[in-house]
Length: 103
Picture 1 (tube, rainbow, N blue to C red):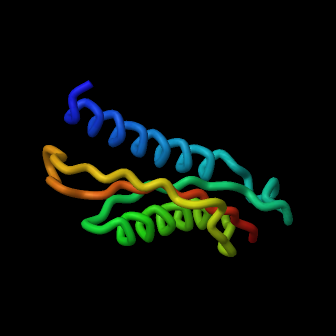
Picture 2 (cartoon, rainbow, N blue to C red):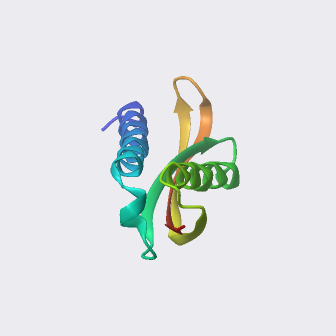
């Protein structure tokens, strides 16, 4: 598989993860949130791995805030993908992070 195809697959996967997190956030009722934590997955991009991870965590927090959940903590380790020849960004990093949030 060519590297450009792998880059597109990674980009599609991160986009789908962000869309899934947004749908979960929009469809979850604040009444259902109660005291049990809910999981949100965020996706991000950055010039460094750290920047991409912070962007992904922030995306997860924003998705949770749409459901009225403001206290979040990172679950597990974020996944980081390094891309050397992205058609728009060149050498860049993509990340995916899952956060557990409560009201």
